[in-house]
Length: 52
Length: 180
Image (cartoon, rainbow over all chains, first blue to last red; front, side, top):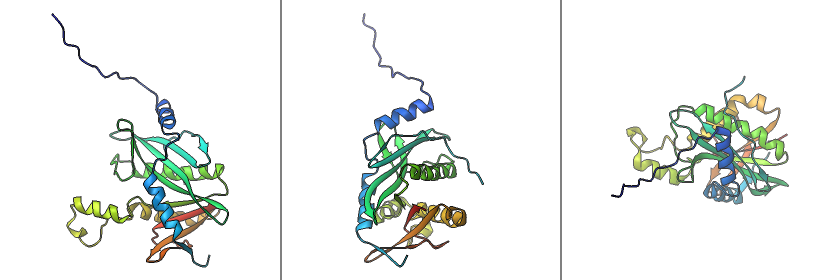
């Protein structure tokens, strides 16, 4: 008789600094806010500086 | 005066900017991402856009519109601000532009669809909330900040954004700062 096999999610413990390092390496080459950069570019193309 | 801040780990720097990460503590632990991204030049200075949001590890997505509700808004805000001097340590000749993620018309439209406030019909009270927080912080701390930084405020007009020297207690749609 076969027993049912159940997938069990593996939980690992990680320190906060370890987690942040992991996140940093994962997001290293990614632009995080692409839409916002486009918005900022739009603002900047039509920018005028009053007397500073 | 000192403000409580979360610990930030130094991250790798590239030509396009720098990222910082920290963990917001509350009912949930939330990874926060702060990014300075180079997007324009002005007067020989590279201009970087400052943004921050939540990083969801499970979905691998960044969200800068979400209200985390972790009960530590000022703690988070102070931590984001603490990255500014750090940033200028690496990019001394740069300029930083700050805008609110809740200042766009898209935000207002989206907010209007789920708005529960009855008195929010004509003006969205949540719009510009973030940049308002930045402006009031700069206004409050202006005299001490002025020793190290110069501030400019951006006002949206029909013909574009007009930048002027920052005036205390005035609400701007964007804030530009450089290190003296």
